[in-house]
Image (tube, rainbow, N blue to C red; front, side, top):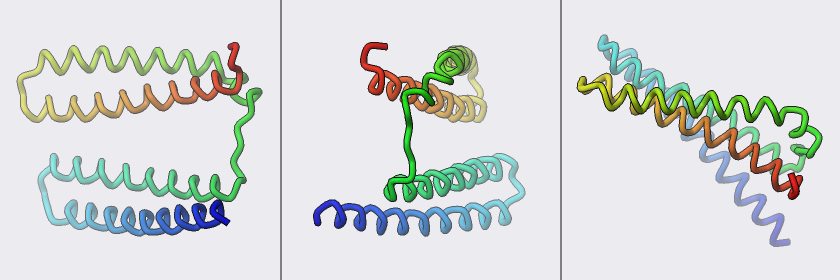
Length: 141
């Protein structure tokens, strides 16, 4: 009984969150329509795009709660080398971005580089999580 209640709790939370993301997208669109400033449009557009990705992730969580999503050791093994190569790309992007950030004195450029560094760090973590899944499924790998 407790498992069902937790599932219902998460399903309700996901539905509320989906509605908030829809509102966030609409808000960003209003901001973008209300300004001619390219920087404001860019930043609102970035948040809008993130919210669209959040909706995709939340819908995936709904499928996961239904038990329709799985991950096998073989599926991770098939892409293991590609994951390792991608992690190196993300690390190189972070290193380059940090250098550029340190060299820049322009407030807007530093702000945008900071945003990119956060995103590259997030990408690095995402692919490292997949590699960690592999370690959990193959404890001796």
